[in-house]
Length: 209
Image 1 (cartoon, rainbow, N blue to C red):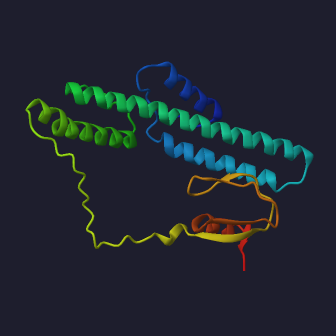
Image 2 (image 1 turned 90 degrees about the vertical axis):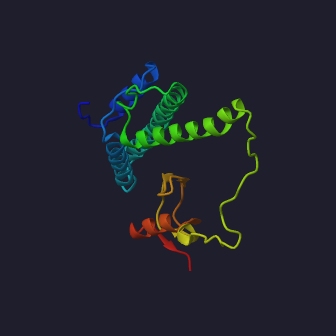
Image 3 (image 1 turned 135 degrees about the vertical axis):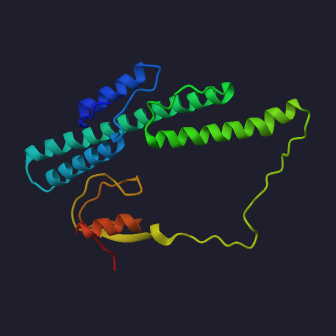
């Protein structure tokens, strides 16, 4: 596929095409990498606008926020539409043992999903359907592979930290992909450690003492 530059218009057109056609549509192999860069640029524009104090920039901030929300919605809808098509292709091919080149328009990340779905469908078909047809007993007991004496180690990486906001901030998406905010200057909040580290580095918050 011809390389494309991600814009709001091209992103909307990609979604429209994916929704209106039954077949999985071809995408630039670097589509998701380019989309991440595009979204980051939008957040940088938003942060730059928020630092200015003007009635005109207030209007621009609102427009940028709305556009970011729409971009997130389009991205989610596009992903889920392609996800449904990939799972349906895997289901049909697992049943028919088809060797058609249905992976042709899948991105590398999507091919990994497809392969894992196929493997699980084939595995369970043998374990359940084939055994039932042959009159074999199906093992229904759930076996836990984890040793009883194995202690789970909690990952302290995202332990919450209490911070104080040094400036007003609009709603934002953290590194954990959760939404936070909006916050006023002086607000106190508990945020995951990796989100806190990023905000401290940008001099937007400080740890509460």
